[in-house]
Amino acid sequence: MRYFVVPNLKEKEKYIELSKKYNLGFEYNEFFIPDTLDDENKISDILSEYKKLNRTMDTLHGAFFDIVLDSMDQRIQNISLDRVKKSLEIADKLNCKGVIFHTNYITWMKDQKYRRRWIEYNKRAYLSLIEEFPNLEIYIENMFDLDPYLLRDLVKEIHHERIGVCLDFAHANLSNTSLDIWFCELKPYIKHIHINDNDGIMDSHDEIGKGSIDFKKVFEYIRKLEDKTTILIEISDYNKALNSIKYLKENGFIE
Image 1 (cartoon, rainbow, N blue to C red):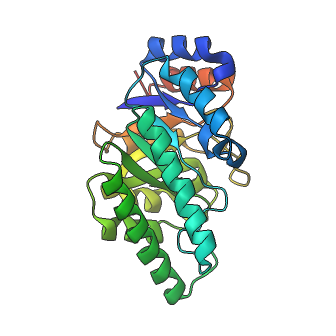
Image 2: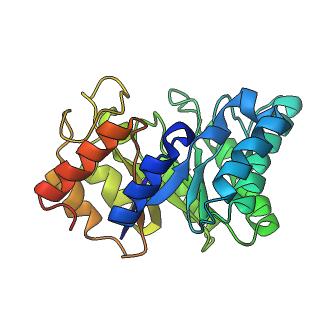
């Protein structure tokens, strides 16, 4: 399995060295910010800097703020689709392996009509997009989902070899559903993983070992996955990311 970190252009050289030392991939986080997506010059400048690194097989976190692919408002639906497509276009230019998008559904809506519409519209959108971008994979991530079932049903119905689940263990830790259930229900569809720590209340992206997540259990799950599964240490601060890597190595979670 290969691990990834979130790079920062302001500390580019440090992240390049970190990547070389631990054979880490990058997951680019600049391109989900709305102001950036609206500024072609800024996109071009960031792309130019990253393309100089001549990297391949990295990942990119796609747009997620207010993305509603199943919106009843056609204009909002169209804008959401444009944002998602823009993320994929940028990832393609960076020779990325895959792009992560959030589920973004209303968790308290239990009405089956709403849930069915959510599945159908997201399925239609992602199947169209994956054909338009044949060099990319799409990973759909649990955000503040209360359980794994709707995400499971979506990816199961999509049934495409380049579309899978990004299981975020930290987000799962904020739900009232056990990690056992999250993992068991999503296991057949997991292609990518996000890990960081929190207190079970706030999505604080703490360094690993500083919160309430049982990483011994998390890595028991991870070891059951295919070797090609990729894992992001989703922490933006360089020192906290480095401390997390050291924690994982010292505790025998990674070699």
